[in-house]
Length: 49
Image (tube, rainbow, N blue to C red; front, side, top):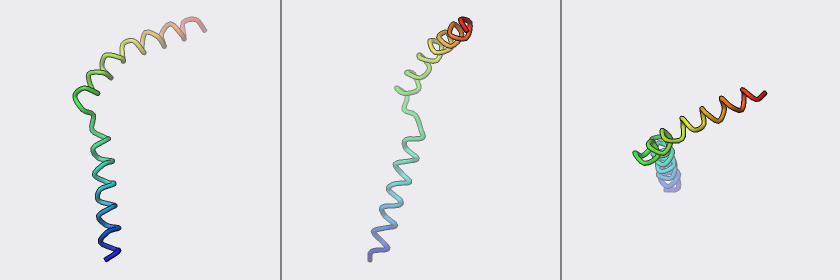
């Protein structure tokens, strides 16, 4: 019976990991909005070096 619980726990863990690998729409929008800002920041940072 313990093996069943271990397997269920492992399945839940894998499911959680998989869900976190997929971005929600809100996370995608947030990431997309930040990307140009980061690119500009790094451009000026390396320009000053």
